[in-house]
Image 1 (cartoon, rainbow, N blue to C red):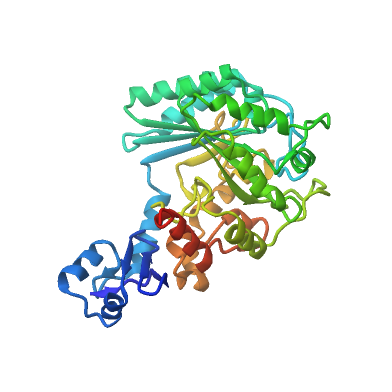
Image 2 (spheres, rainbow, N blue to C red):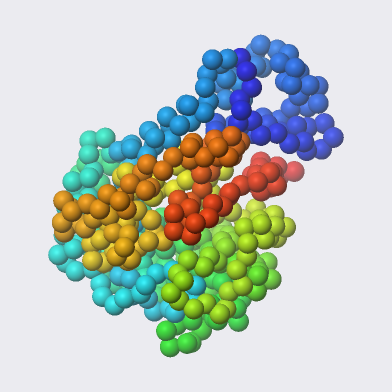
Length: 417
């Protein structure tokens, strides 16, 4: 046996060493004597075999990099999970200066809705065991009737085919009511993302209504509507160098709701849409955001955090059975490209007209071709990072570092101490 190349190690306390395997996601704690034996390959056989079961050791002739590459491509082209992000409209009642979408009026027609249901039925095969549906926009709750209609029809498909159906929503939270929350619960939405960009002053500058009025108080009041709801709410705060000082205050205000289903996490504001002037956000560099999360955020991590999950791609855009659809029925691979004509892959009204140049970028780009990535211990949790950033923004951002990983492990496994 040999040690895995994906063993990440750090020391905590005077007599404890932690080994975390970035591929298997196994974690083991050894004392100094045990770690010395680990380093010398002198652990008792029963201990070594137990570590082998958890990926800390592997067989001498096992090529972990080749196996990881196999699992990566297997995940890309698996038909087990069908993922669809649905934007009933690209219109929005907000006017956020950092918005990366090109907003337009209109909603998904009945013709497109029917074609979308046909598209789902044609893509859900006997191999499919899970449908993962996200509601997006624009602001999807401008048209809750479309969400309800499509949600019921999609759930009917899942029930008839004996498929697990998971539903999530991204909404600005302004239009939520008790009736809408009940409807979302009924169609099977289990998680909602709502954005608050700091306390009222900073938030209202960054996320005003189209008429300029603030939205903070209304959204915060709407969070109280989830008191009796089983839906998990992830409050996202888009962070820049100007509003970052509000994070801990907002976190305390969220805690005052006394609802364990409502959690907050930070995300960096990115200057994606060069066509829209943004005079408010003072963008953070990747290093500045890392330092902020390490020093200020405690145990706050995105609900889609990949440090501990078992996916083998950076994001769903790289997977063949994953699409984003706008109100016109246009299909895209990435959320950041939705609504932009130059990125359309196909349309549900005309499935035969496939633009492979847009589709294949996400399906064939190989992180193993980059020497830095292929040699990186974080490859099993990063897989080369965001392909949109690499393709459209011409940058590659490494999403992980030693301090962030250490903090995550400490908050996840040792916070009770």
